[in-house]
Length: 87
Image 1: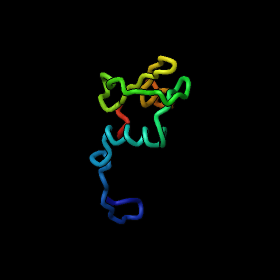
Image 2: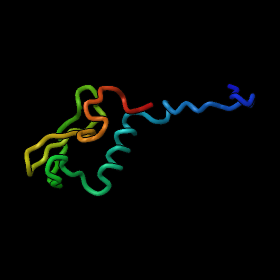
Image 3: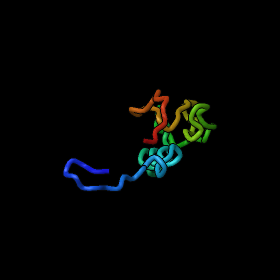
Image 4: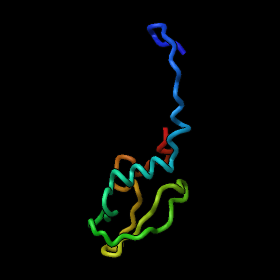
């Protein structure tokens, strides 16, 4: 493919490199670098609570302190987002 200067460039297809599982893993690592914290009370008494039905890569959690439920995207700009995170 040629750009405006007329030079040819190879186009890298990043869709094959970055899938939803890796995107959610990156979100978790950036959001909770130490321990996963409850988005409601900030407690670290959090356990995995299954996965989202529409996005199996999205982990759900339950807080043993406030009894709240949340997932990887709760409280982010992607909350309520029903599309894949990958490009």
